[in-house]
Image (cartoon, rainbow over all chains, first blue to last red):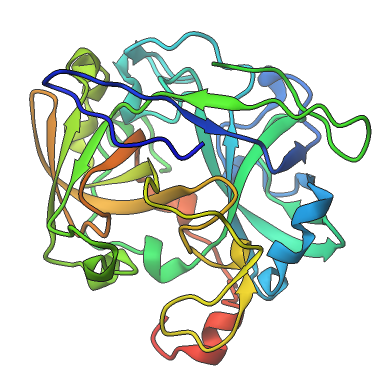
Length: 163
Length: 163
């Protein structure tokens, strides 16, 4: 854990980084096919996060936030491809221009509504994550950090109407 | 890479997850003291992302987005503590209720403005990341995914005015 700096474009010394899950995400979605693509398509979906018992104190004051950011590992991700065709898309796009799970480091992020915390268990809503997903981190969702002006939406605008 | 499911609260079998950086983030911030706490405090800061050459094709169509999400490793993070006192805060909070770098898995996320892509090099603005930070993932920033209604801001409201 906590490896040093790596260098590219030179004498590449690529070091790996090791994380240990902090918990497990439980959701109604037992298969990839059932799992919504985005939180807005999962508005009523209730989830339960089982945090490691010894991390309970690290949740102090989180209950005062209405929304939290989950950072998790796409544990069913397949080998990545450089370009992918997301569901409902008709064209291939660079994987970094998509939220597709099969990426070089299969990390996912979702903003969910925090309903309650009981001990080391968190109840959440609007979850769009597969049941059994290993959780890597929790952060408070702070709208002003995400709020951006003059955003453009790239290829999504060409293919979808309601982004 | 791609380890299986882990279980807690039972016969705990905690497996580690291994990631390989996809690139390096360069910024004007050479020390932690210089690094802004949030992107909104780093509005004019220009950054440069050096992606692995062999991932260049994975950037296809990303240039049509105005903002991107960087997911990175806090490579200078210290051992984590369950409760931390963030800069400018007078009280301790659970580390998961903060963006503090010293967390169980020291993962950081930032939304930055994408200025241009040249080959495997990305030019960005509003960067709040330490120079030399290993990059783990890039995702397009899609405002509707982050937009939430009725958010509450927890302890931040008590301590700060301009969140």
